[in-house]
Image (cartoon, rainbow, N blue to C red; front, side):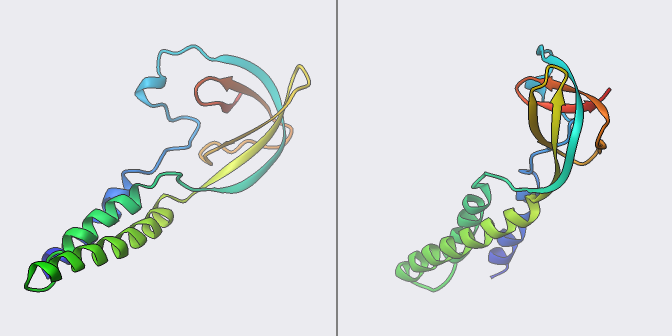
Amino acid sequence: MNKKFLSLAVVPMLLAGCADNINSDYYSVNQTGKVSTVSQCTVLSVRAVKVNSDSDAGTLIGGIAGGVAGSTIGGDSTAHALGAVGGALLGGLAGGAVEKGVNAQTGLEYIVKLDNGQVLSVTQGTEQALGVGQRCLVLFGSTTRIIAQ
């Protein structure tokens, strides 16, 4: 019984490691050393948005943990199999819900006007809030970022 609760307790910790960092000052190793095009712009509007993970890792991890925990139920092989299936279903549902709660982030959607007149929308983290009318730089690369000029 303790193994079941221990395996389910590990799910939130595993999912916390799955969260993507959406801040403009965060670069993954494979993004370093790459050339980005840079354009000057002016911020037209800013609004707060919710950013959720597109990953199914929570459902997968929860399903595995639930299946393992559920397989410890009962005394015969049929009970173990039914427990595993039930545990996997419940664990998958719980893991998916936990992932949404753990990985949900607040972001900022910026509408900017490039100096050439083109208008763009970029969503990123809140660590470096930019204001309406502020002059900025747009870094076009594998991840587009807006930073203060």
